Length: 116
Image: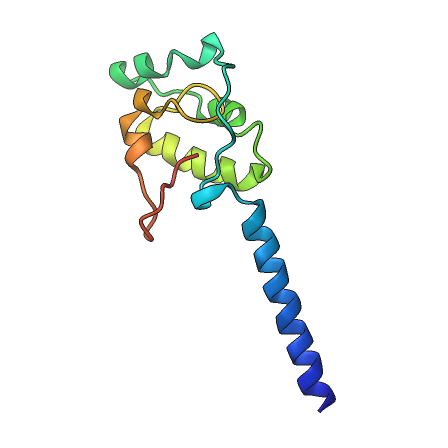
C-alpha cells in the first residue's frame, strides 16, 4: 500500500513538472522569443554569405539569435544544426525567416518547426 502511494505521488509530481516545462515553452513548442525591432547590421550579411558560398560563423550568429530565450542551450543546439545545413541565420532574435528560406522550412521528425 505504501509503495503504491509513493509511486502515485511520484507520477503526479512528474506530471506537474512536465506541465510546468510545457508552460515555460513558447507556443507551438518553438524555441523563439518575441520579435523586437533590434536588428543589428552584423546580422544582415547572412543572405550575402548564403548566396556566395562563404561559410558563416554559426556560433556567433546563433549566440545572438538565442540571446533572449530562456532555453539557451536547446536553442543553440537547434540553431547551430540549422545554420550548418543552411549556412544562414535570420537577423534578430526571432522572426525575419523570409531572409533564410531553408532555415524557415526545416522541420523535426514530428513536423514541428526546427529552427529558432
